[in-house]
Image 1 (cartoon, rainbow over the protein chains, first blue to last red):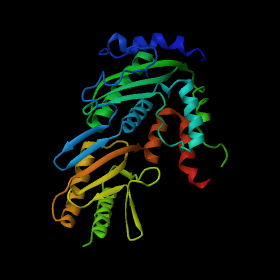
Image 2 (image 1 turned 60 degrees about the horizontal axis):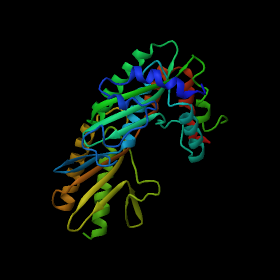
Image 3 (image 1 turned 90 degrees about the vertical axis):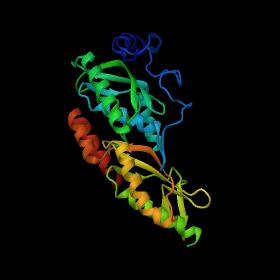
Image 4 (image 1 turned 30 degrees about the vertical axis):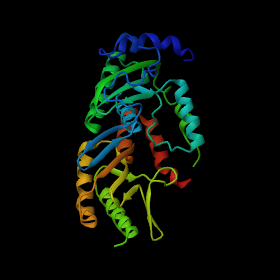
Length: 183
Length: 132
């Protein structure tokens, strides 16, 4: 649980997208070089579609939340994010007062261009699901949801499976995200 | 019609068009309501109207998870254009910004159902936080 670095490397390498170049298969799914993977990237600006009747902008945050929700829709995904990001999200949620029904985007990294998006996910799988099948299902669902909802083409979905949780164990770090345990 | 009341009328029309569009959860005026239109002691949050030489309407939206956004923005843009074109006397650009996405309570339950009872309880807590 505590030794994330050793649990990361093997599953990340085995489940990374086939379109990814070896250099993309970094141990942390969240390190990325801006502008390198999607076309039409203009240094972190959100996806903008210009028409004769005005522009439409989709914030990166929106793409990240869609990816997070799409990931959680797959059974076999215990939770998104590593221990650190989960704990941080819980602490930050307490500080900022973010409500627990907001979709959390810890463990999700996105790079969004004008017409394309790339997604990096860090997740924990639920024992005894097949990690390959979960990764494939997540990749498919994230791609489908982002492409159908935003119209962006998803060029890659990199998945790092950093931990395996047993049924009953998965609520542990969720406790941190709860705003209050008393009514 | 003075410039102030024109922008307020346009902002109200744009707001009601947005609220009538399926898939729009809310309008977002930003953390301190900076993205708003003011007039006659009233504020329309999430809508910014420009009058003058280069008139335009800007709307910041929070959408619900599920509906394809290209379809949503097409519908919303047509609704807004239909309502504000008579006010301006001509077609103006309608700029839409999708700043956030949210899930409805029922969407949460559907997600929770697939993830087990633990999260369903959490969804109930989330729905009830307004009481505290």
